[in-house]
Length: 193
Image (cartoon, rainbow, N blue to C red; front, side):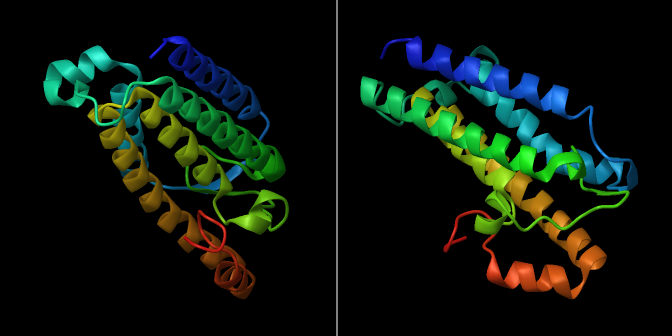
């Protein structure tokens, strides 16, 4: 496979990270935030995922089997991965923009926090995570190695843990309004998950 898809994917992730850092500067004041231990449990698997996906030398030094291909290294898988990354990051950005100043990098309650149920939040309760998981899946497909699948599995574990914490905080904050929203709107994949 040509290196072009992987370079493009790296560029998309870099652009997304830059946007995320800039957008994080304009948020509401935090009233309550998860503990540091909870944040580490939520973010730890994602950090390991980043190492597995973007630092192959580290991953394969620790466990050489992680560098073995599980998918064919061909043009189709490379460009399919690019398409998934682009779609996933675009969906996450749409959700982040729609969430606006309510966004937080941690499980948190903001001053004047609003329950958003429109835009991508009409489709799924956690559209940022849905988009990021699609982008991570695309990255893993393009890489085609065991490290990609392991990274995706770790990211999914961290995101599912964080989703549970967010759902509990939103139910506590918004009561029946959130419980109704939760009963009508899937967590990650419309009509499925």
